Image (cartoon, rainbow, N blue to C red):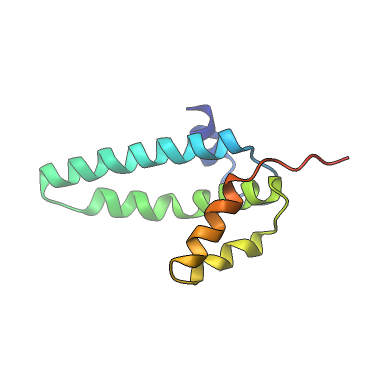
Length: 104
């Protein structure tokens, strides 16, 4: 849960680094929050909760992805691969799963 809170508190920090565990734990809690909000939306017959949450998590999600790519030794420009259908998402996913680069 600490990683998820750190994602929200460091939403404007695009220059740091995030380790593999930090990124994927934040992603897991983000997924769980989205799932719960989607379930509540379904029960209530509305979609406003999911839509607001999706917009709110856009910048923190990009921020933590950029920090994760920095930690793996890639620049933020690697996110542009996602513009390619299917193949781009796979390339970015592989880069996000790479181990941290040790700086000497």
